[in-house]
Amino acid sequence: MTAKELRTMYVSFFRERGHREIPSASLLPENDPTVLFTTAGMHPLVPYLLGEKHPLGRRLTDVQKCIRTSDIDEVGDDVHLTFFEMMGNWSLGDYFKEESVSMSFEFLTRHLHIPPERLAVTVFAGDEAAPADEETAQAWKRLGLKEEQIFRYGSEENWWGPVGHTGPCGPDTEIFYDFGKPKCCESCGPACTCGKYVEIWNNVFLLFNKEEDGSLTGLAQKNVDTGMGLERVLTIFNGKTNVYETELFLPLMERLAELGAGKELPLRDRRIIAEHVRAVTFILGDPRRIVPSNTEQGYILRRLIRRIIRLFQKAGMESDCLRGLSAIVIDQYRDVYPELGENRDFILEELQKEQALFSRTLEEGLRKANRYLDSLEAGCRNEEQRGTGSPENGKPAMLSGELAFRLYDTYGFPIEFTEELARERGFAVDMGGFQRKFEEHQEKSRLASAGKFAGGLAEHSEQTARLHTATHLLGGALRKVLGEEVSQRGSNINAERLRFDFSFGRKVTKEELAQVEAMVNEAIDRKIDIVLEEMPPQEAWRSGAIGIFSEKYGDMVKVYTIPGYSREICGGPHAGNTEELGRFRILKEEASSAGVRRIKAVLERKEI
Ligand code: SER
Image 1 (cartoon, rainbow, N blue to C red):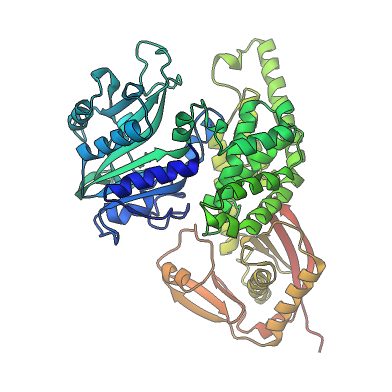
Image 2: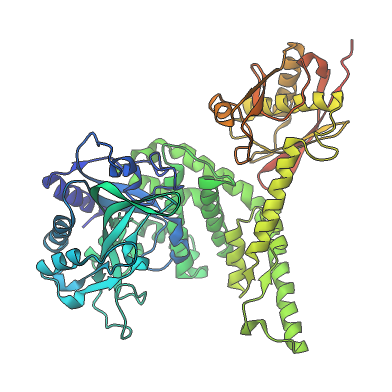
């Protein structure tokens, strides 16, 4: 059976049972702000699970693209993926447990022809928050499952959601395929990771909403939310042992073997490359375009791409292979997910940019990282020789948070990536220390941009006010010339010059700098009055003002506008009119750290 046939078979089965098909939503959730990515088919449906009426009724079905980064460390085994397709069906206050499990049983045994004895199911055993789900256990029995095929677990296994802090949740019944291997031990069951059982479907009874304070409130309607992993079912149906043997991964795996990765790279690394290439292609191809960055979804994307590039490097492969591999994914899926075809150039360009950005610092960063790890290793050996105890006996020795932060800040190593490097050599990373360094750094940039550093914006002289206004004009001009992705990363002003750090993936050309300079001087020549308004931060953002969003603002913020050029949340002070600035001149443009450029500029007196 092909993936296409499976998708059709699933959706048709539920359509025949009164469900309406809905399209796969974006990977970036629009209806659920509690998660970064759509991790399951239910996220786009949250308002309807909470009681809003869905325009297509109370029975829905779809195939939803999902990203689950919680499984990233398992990727490379037989079945775990960061990107996968979830086939799902929902009852929004319509059918409930009995009908749900009986439809699942029918689909599995009559349509996928899985022998009932190859199934194992789990049900919720109950706890102080909610009672045991005996009803579902009995429903499974009525369908013919034997007692030894039904397992009862607590909330760690059989309570689903919410994925974020709040949202719909409830007991579930998970359906496993039993590969038929002998049990690995006395207590072997679906919760065991020995490989005998693999989860293929989860039927959740969304009865509660978890509130901010952690309490559960009953929902007005009883919902069913199910999700079945397409890649896993395809594997099982076609008698394969792992997802990489299915048509969905074969072209990528074959190409990787041709590229020589087979010789150098362990199978697990090849699988990780294939899996991550598919995931990043889908993330970049999403209609709600996101690009690699240091925050939120952009960071996950960056982390996945950089991991691929490191594995290429490990195998001695050219990082250029990345685009070719991504093109395979695009061609393979564009019929089902047309957005991949539509965004083909964007996907390949962004991969190219990120690859170029990271390749520059990767080699040097790896040398540095290895030197740190070498000295750590030498230190451990000395300690052992001195007889002060072996780190082997306790926790592994740790790479300091400060060094990990340096690798992040200067060489663009995602922290998880440094952890992986350290782990490969038997070390851990001091994550607490890293976090502290990271926060210290954030605080510095925050204070710098809020003007609270000595020598920074706090010198309220007229010259610094003028330079401050010039900084806003510079930011505005950079965004116009280089694109909206330019965002401020730091700012520092003294009586002589301004320094402005901003995100951008390459060197800014002479021509672009000249354009930026000219644009700032044009604003000066136009003698524009600078407008100051005060308003609540939400209103400021809504009105298009830029600012550091993660910062904790008070009730009211100041918004400085230089009409036609810039609108920013800022503490000030500023010049009254751009005329006061004189002549703006860029002195220097250079790299500040990975993905961040730095411009130094001055204001000179205007020649009259
Ligand atoms: N929301 C459930 C899950 O993700 C069923 O789709 O497992």
